Length: 99
Image: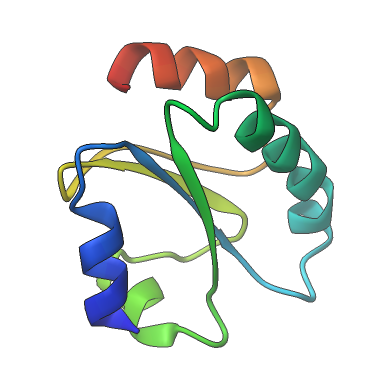
């Protein structure tokens, strides 16, 4: 999975990664916000979900210690990261800044 992940985040299109876990209540609250954001910004950004329990090597590589953690990558580089629930407007602002 790590190789596929690296390939996905290395493209020209920014990628927003939702590091989450099935058991995480705040993650469940973040999910519909991300779905709406992904629909509205689908021409500008890719949004993917990484379950930290199923992909511990990726979570460890990026030192994910709490979920949800959102991270934006552009051309393979981490350009933004935030833990906790992020409102849709916050995601829009980040995309404007780094997208």
